[in-house]
Length: 222
Image 1: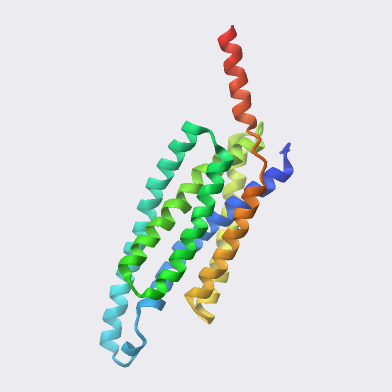
Image 2 (image 1 turned 120 degrees about the horizontal axis):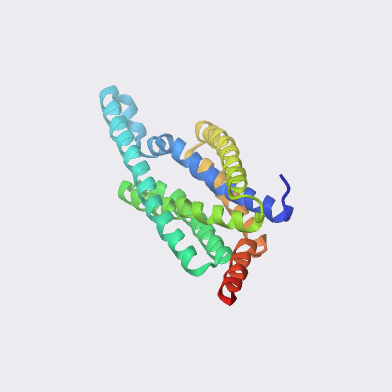
């Protein structure tokens, strides 16, 4: 395996891995985050009441997780259609990445409002952009690494996502356990901001698209 643009491939893999890994971490630890924020401390004096509240919030955590997934499905479809229509790989990827960062910040700070409906909304926005990034990141990575096979490029991006996901889940879980969910979310926000910077540094050289356009022109002339 030999990549022509090593720098672009590394930046693309790291940025995609950071955002996708962050989504994996949030999804995995969502139950802990919701319970930590919405189980009132005063209920600890009453075991039956505490159990009831825990069950309610676990149910809410599951529903919020479903909201993340459904909103993400819509985001993936719309972002993919937009990219296919405009071919603006770099700017679209960068904007969606930036909106994911802002969505993470909003989700983090609205948790303290203790408004479960607001959390549903912000989680939906977060899922829309985080999952919506997936087709953009993979397509951009394929463009950068062309003429390497799409399977190789996609496999590498997915491997980075899994690695970051494992690392982020372990660290964020430790921060939630030892401190609070806010610390864990800020940790992820800092990494997502780094991903924004890395994405901005990627050169927008659409190798596959340019080759396809040139091939199409030759076919028309023939």
